[in-house]
Image (cartoon, rainbow, N blue to C red):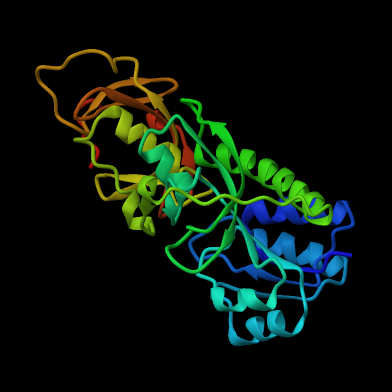
Length: 310
């Protein structure tokens, strides 16, 4: 019988644990990601309830502690699986695991190593991304040998959470396949091509401020990457801050403007307010007042084409 630990969280971790437990793959113990305070959906609550139901011991935290590593050291596990975890893992403890730490990363490694790859691929306008199952090893972040990869096409109207749901399904399938191949001793790994590696940095909520002088594609991509349940791309109308939940390219996006003030309201429609960008337009369809929490159609607030968002 395979003995393993689970380290992770988010919707991917929840889906994975449900799939594993449903196949009678029960972890010896788990370390569950504690979300940042600004995060809206607390998947750790659902994961904790699932673990309690099956009497699986766990701790809730943002970073592995000495006690967690001590438990790994003394538990004689086959491996530890990592999905939806955000901080570095001490690879020196791999020697206490027969097959080390096996992780899922939301990109086609070696591309987009590092933080928030789902958000970054959308922001950068990528058309394809994917999930990589790899072994955490010494060296650069996310640079270990790859077990498997699956591609995911990014549709023009995909938001980050749409991709996360696709990733959650694929990650579960890949880990289930990993278990089967581990038991049959058919695991095969291959090295990443370091010459093709790209990296990302950590994002914070303040990075979501919309710069209206950018192109409509760049503004729209930022909105899609950060929309609910993530912190959101935001802008200001007068003194109020609004977090954009839903948008699309504007009706006048392909028109050429000889006179253009980025952020200025171009048109007001029943379905939203069309805003000028440095090039092109976006139609804001739903936003949230950060102070009041009220979610509505921007056309209910924006009543004049004299207004400029900033």
